[in-house]
Length: 425
Ligand SMILES: *Cc1c(COP(=O)(O)O)cnc(C)c1O
Image 1: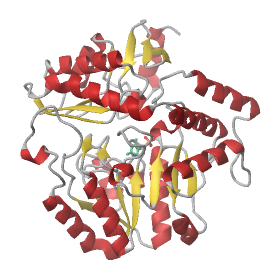
Image 2 (image 1 turned 180 degrees about the horizontal axis):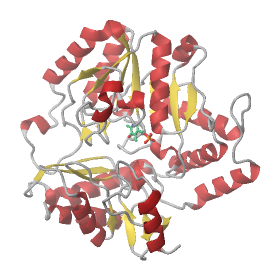
Image 3 (image 1 turned 90 degrees about the vertical axis):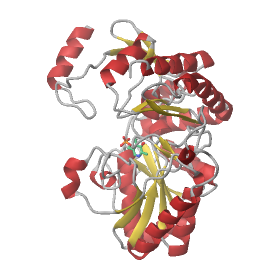
Image 4 (image 1 turned 90 degrees about the horizontal axis):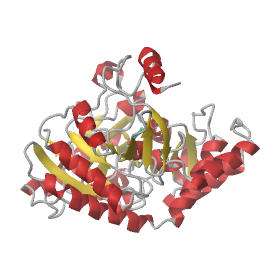
């Protein structure tokens, strides 16, 4: 098919994320992706500044991941996981347990499903059905996951009537990461906001006796607003959970595998959750796979966990995930992420204080320009594409989380495109 035919059939049949059919906003045909670049139907090459939604940390079309997929497919693409097991799944589970300090692993099909499973674990463990979370979160698009997304900005208000009601503590402050300009008082790094700690504590204490679990994204709220908040809040939630015998679920689907500068978001706070969800970068952006991990204590009390998807433990996905974690262990990701953080900080600094720009912030390999008004996505995308960069702004956010494989020149290209885009605000 030529690119025109792909687009024609796309318009006729295919839903994209959060769109109509036809979508009414431009979509671009991709021919191939290699390294940190994607090649469009018309031959244009763009740096994938989104790492394809946090996932492609090693870049696309990586020889080692390709080889892992090939080797595995010659053995078996898939077998059912009920009553059968295999090396790729077991090896991956063992690896994840070692990385997280959590012993039991449920392999799930996607991040949202991993969150559903985490919630089931908490409900089965506690016999309770109420969760506590903070405003501003994003935990996925399935029903239980939607019920703990931000109730206002969570993109899911159409379904409010069908969702269970949970407890929402106030949104965490923006008070972590680095900012290129002296920021307003509420955005400094002078330490955690004591008033917020008190609010958080009051919210947990008011509801503790009916909570199955507390569920949060550690340190970085991703799709809910690209908000970085002080690890002290997470530490406080850990303490409160212990004090009241409530489970703590860390949704590390966006933050896991080095993105924030630590292997997991929880590492900023030096805490271990009772239940953790991972996904996104788990397969290095190759295929959908996620996992929900928990302590042996939680698993023992649950007993039979009532979940079991058809493609559970898919050997292809597990083999690629194993290879991706091998690569991560071999690459100096900590230095790479620190280098990207420094380059994002320098590169985005010129946007700070520009008209229409509310905030510029960087944490690990995440760079954010927050604007005063919601951005015109198509217009911003045109500008960054002219600069050879692929980004997907949303709401008041123009942001990047590039592959760790990006060179300083690649990062400079991305930040240059972002700064150029702010001229159009
Ligand atoms: C993306 C994301 C999810 C949902 O994962 P999917 O694979 O899209 O279902 C859940 N939680 C967080 C924090 C995420 O970033």
